[in-house]
View 1: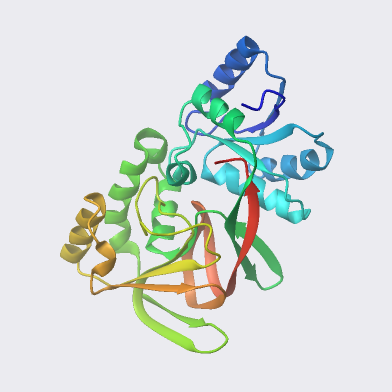
View 2: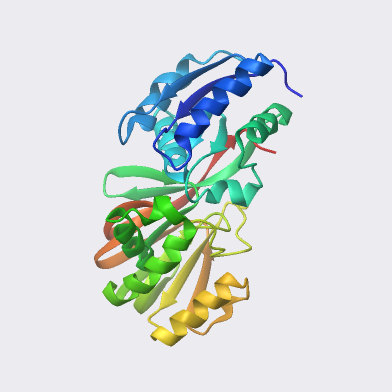
Length: 303
């Protein structure tokens, strides 16, 4: 166990269990005599700014730890990448989805997750998704998608369901989003050949097994292989949608459905031919035009 480790927390109190986490972190750390500092986010984008300012000043044996959901973790990653530092990241999941934690069996309780970090001896290199759009570069940890998943995030942003019932809200919102989402077209350029997909409801680049709060969108996704699975869903009837959701819930092979396609590639450009809602690690985005996807390694304090 790494008893010399000290913690610098970036904590989102407004994540699903964030307020409770702050109290428990202080209580447990004080009881065990661990040295720590807490920096609370005050507004959207603050985790990005805190990561940029804190990382260059951290002394040796001081670990930067994100306390929040997948969105907060994604903000911190983008902050660190913006100053080109591979500062390892520890993580205490307190969000409503916690897809990164699910994929790596990170404990969901405060005490257990602190112990998990203390038992980790070296950082682990994982893939993150680098997204180039026009003159901007951003990063996703779990997924980057366009279509019905973006419409779902849009619907959840207008309600309080996500905070109340977590991933159950995602499933219920899929049903309403189905009637709002219009089919759209995309093309994919790999540099060597191109692919065309018409009348689709979803195109999502996945790096981990889960998205949407525990939905196993691609059960075999590997965040260490430097390639990403692009999951594409054609337009389906409502009965086919219910069948697909049932197969997902029961962990059957939903990807074998005739309307589902998986393209596995390392570097490619997606051209979205109409304005759509999309998401990056569960955060709502407006998507249109060309998005170049590539892989980049980043250090995480996990085992």
